[in-house]
Amino acid sequence: MHPYQDQIDRMWGLIKLRIRALKNEFWIETMDLTYILLEVELRLLLTSKAGEAGKPLPPSEIDKADYLKSLADLSLEKKFIDSNLYNEVLSFNTARRKMTHRLIQGEIEYSQLENVCKDSSDIIYKIQSQWLPITIGPTETQ
Image (spheres, rainbow, N blue to C red):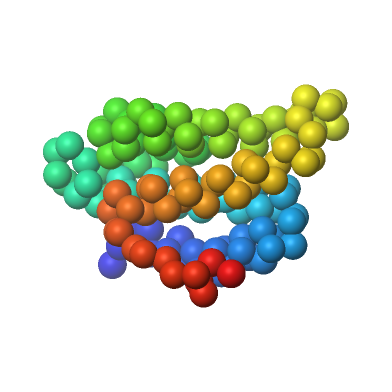
């Protein structure tokens, strides 16, 4: 059994919630669900053979990284992702933190969240493609 099987089992439900939030333009909900999915995707990536060493990292090492940024740091350090994808993850995380902590103070406008949310689908896909290349057709994204 996969070390993160419980998270894998819950992923499809989260993906459906995220798609519904995107369709309904619920940007805050989309940001939160994307954050969760990015964490899971990075954990799955780190348990694959996609890194420079060609072998998965042990769960004990992955579990020390308990936030998105620390998972991205580990993924970059172990060469599971490149610096471009790393920067995309960090950019999303910065926007999410601003949304969470600074939306009320006007540092980010609600309308700015739309592009961040829509662009985050590409980040998820890029991480997935490192360990499980999938082609999504038009009916799956509508």
